[in-house]
Length: 394
Image (cartoon, rainbow, N blue to C red; front, side, top):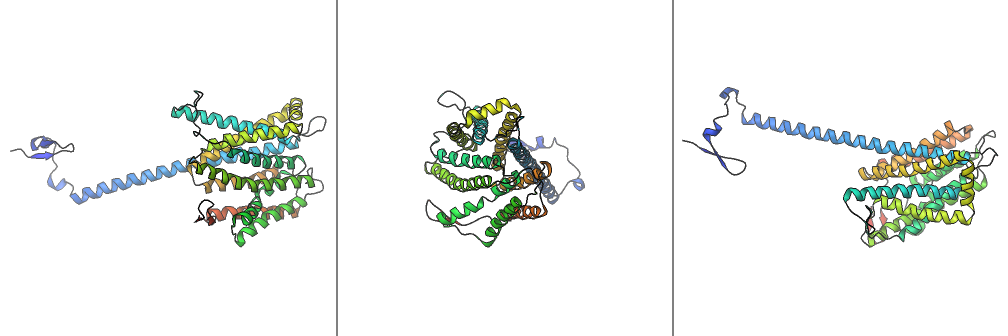
């Protein structure tokens, strides 16, 4: 007599077919409990192995993203300092800040456009001109006007500060204090509230930067001029404006139910940055002067293009990191990068600092490090009022 055994596909097999498999003696057969235990152990091992693989993959991705940000922007800062410290054979220096912004923005536009074309080719989509295009459809361009203007002004004023004698370490530390105008704007316009730690942090960065700026040794080759200080203050004001403008840009996009991709933001923001920088440089006569200077000094032109490409590549690494990790991770990396840029400049670019300057440097770095620690510990979440519906959100 043959017994029917159900199979996985709903069919049946006979005992005679099952008997074809060799049977172990009863004392050698595993009990059902042992079998279940073995299956459970195997499943647990597989799960643990999968978790370990995911952890290793995330570690590699973080190393790649953070390493790219550090390498790109450390070299970026070094090149920026070299551009404005360059002297030609006749002793003249490169001071054409708006021409520099044209070239930097152009490099970012080219890089972002190529990225969007590659994305479009991979997805098989084309735009109205029959070209591969991975950008967001029907993306409004008008919101990028104000964002491009405020950002190019911030960068341009920073470059003018360097061109007018402000040292790179002081300029970088001062830019790290941009939360000051942001806080002022939020207090006056947004009704935000801040704790004692926030105020102490701002005071530490600004105070430390001021001490460092005023404590340069007399033998130092670079002295902070009043005009350089004015330009870096203007850059900070534009940073404060940029924060609000970018929030409004994203709110405008959300209102029309469009979510721009990172390379959309990179391409179109830099496109308007380039157009504004081009108009300013032409109106001031800098564009032709900058081209003539670079034609006579190919070395500085090489520095500018390397600097511009580092800017574009660094932004791509930022997008890569943000897409795979919490924005806090990227913020921590970019903030600590500023500390390394300052230390690299002081140690390897010939800056001479008195004892009082090191005290100021330590105070400013302590303020920056406090920001990083506060974010890592999760204290950076603030309750703010929603502009759209008046409800509170984190």
